[in-house]
Length: 85
Image (cartoon, rainbow, N blue to C red; front, side, top):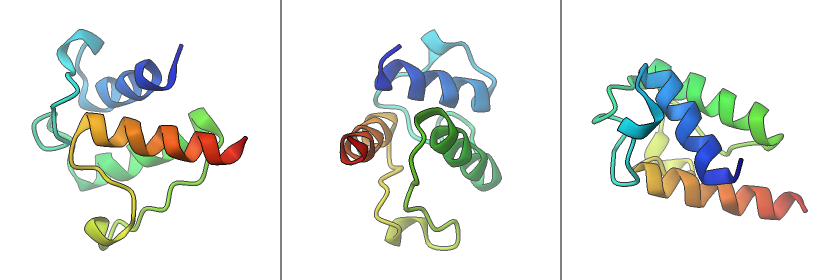
């Protein structure tokens, strides 16, 4: 399973949706994930990829981890995974 598929699976699980219902253009809001759900999603991503996500729940826009869309989250995770190598 590649990064994209794994991130989509995590988001779908958090949103209680089928993986096929999650598109790259979806936002956290359009998936129905609230702020607490977003924090849980970040934890799941960190665990799944063994990375540390630079995310501040109190100031998500200032955290350096783009959560504006599924596509942005995947790109951010891919960047963090590459840094690990």
